[in-house]
Image (tube, rainbow, N blue to C red; front, top):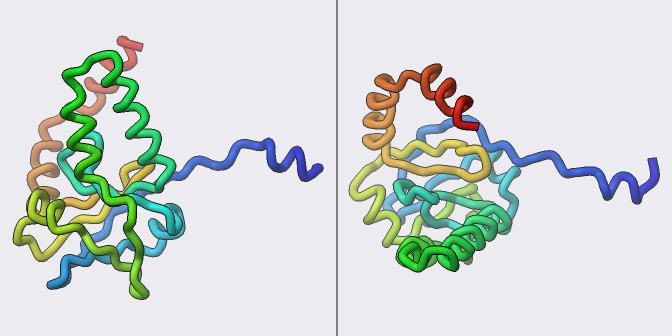
Length: 160
């Protein structure tokens, strides 16, 4: 195989899977597990997920896709400008890991999503890392028990 053929092959998709419980230290730092750090690399953004219900650690290229997508939606529907503005406001592109693999969660995000929690769930969310309080994780688990997954999949397949 030539080097040109190797370069033209698609890169494997980033798949961020798994969940870990970690603590928030007194300075607001959270450990990002090594597997996630390897997938994300050193160029990342800490912000909110698209649903704006959790903290997200995005590889820069994934965050850029999200912000571009929201920008395109705003061109079609100006009322979505508030969504884009909030997503932008809650994005911190200058994030970095310390020597222990921790990231400092900006105070605004900590206050909005973690409040006084001591324990967080750090989980893969396909192409980004999602961080929620342990309390929110328990509530989400309880509400998920009421979801008929097979029915949801079936209805979604019929819509496609």
